[in-house]
Length: 227
Image (cartoon, rainbow, N blue to C red; front, side, top):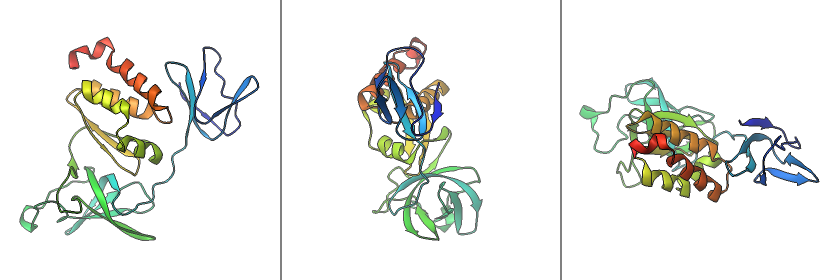
């Protein structure tokens, strides 16, 4: 079970073999945290500390996952979990004109690109890439939305090996935002839950350890019928 630790806190487990990972330092017979965060332990004994999440600061061309919070005549207000709410013009979608604008509702999840960002000004979003194509941006239907640190979000966006293990075995959709929000959808709720759990549990875990965790998870008998 994950626990919180402050810098210099002792983190040695009560039992079992331990392999020292990131954020942990061996001092004599003790293991201490080198940074504040969540203490995690992998199935093969790896022990590491995941740093606390940093606040997201929007940057131009960031891909973000946000939630519609207000509807206006010409745009939507979107919570991208940063210092300021963002604006998404109702025409900022591929092939959209005034007569066929999307009808997004409060609470809808959207995958967007930051088009404009400046200090003390609400960021401007779009649901097209630099060439005007959707390129995966737009409303995200169904699924679940959860948070990870912005650092881990960058890692997930790069396509780590453990996601490859899941993708070769399970069918699911995923959108990762630079703002630390991740959306996952699949036909089976168990698959959604598994992907969400692994995305969170692999934070700060070395790639080889994360891959082993994914292989163990997809090899579980209760998922055999979903593959």
